Length: 321
Ligand code: UDP
Ligand code: MG
Image (cartoon, rainbow, N blue to C red; front, side, top):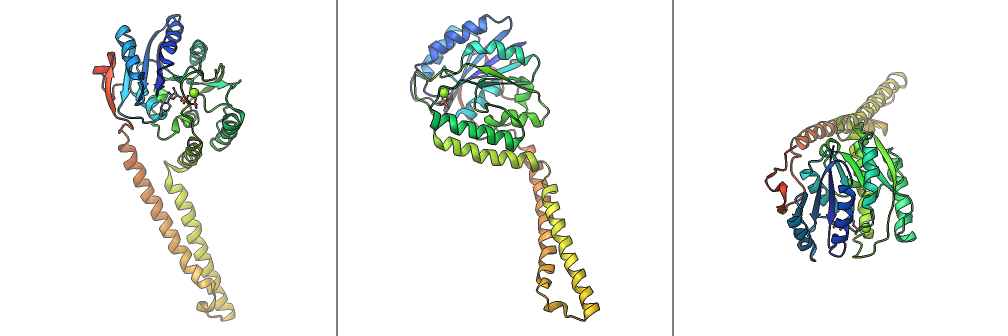
């Protein structure tokens, strides 16, 4: 078993050296091979400079430098594309996650496809972080049906094939356990240490929370209907069409039995409208099916642009599996 550790970094110059020291100590104590992939997410401080220094000293370190700040999910996605380990470990680069937890995650990863960290004792602000986050955890668990106590923890371990088969957009990396579980992936939660941020600034913002909620709606819709839009639209369409036909049967029966004029009944308009709407819905379902197919063919596009690649991955192509 080999391990790839993927770490996104955005303006973390104060943390890198210590992070690397601690990480190396932990990884060297393992009896498995490893590589570290640092993804510099368009930092404007000396993050890249520090990373270049580390990479020059050490052969098992790879540095991806993104052209601009694409955000943490894109940075993770870039790291995943280049990772070669059988197990991929992700963590934050601000020393809030503790590298010392990695061996425990890896132990669990022998049994499970995905091991997710659980920050049991969070040391963040109660009102701005912990309360919103417990609401988010409850909401995501309820909506997706995959119950985790901590969706927001970056420290996770994935079997390589699990992550390689998922495409992540927006804040989607948060929902990886939920998305992965639809593919029948086994998931475990492991308690992890979580430190307060000592150096550098948090990049968290309230707009991130809103984006997570919007993404949750997308995830729910995709989960239920993305591959079979016809089922969703055709069900509505047929209900609508059949109601229209029902109305006409009623109107004709009334005409025959009581001699009323069909056109005088207000239901007449509805009887015309519903079947037309029904046909429209079914048409939308068919269009949806076509879009799904086109979309699935065209999904090879990456969501980031790489400026340069340092280290052994330089000659690797993105598609190399
Ligand atoms: N990060 C990143 N790109 C961004 C924002 C953050 O790569 O646009 C990295 C950041 O350097 C850190 C991790 O993602 O390693 C988590 O970010 P942060 O600690 O600011 O978020 P918080 O822990 O406060 O939610
Ligand atoms: Mg942090």
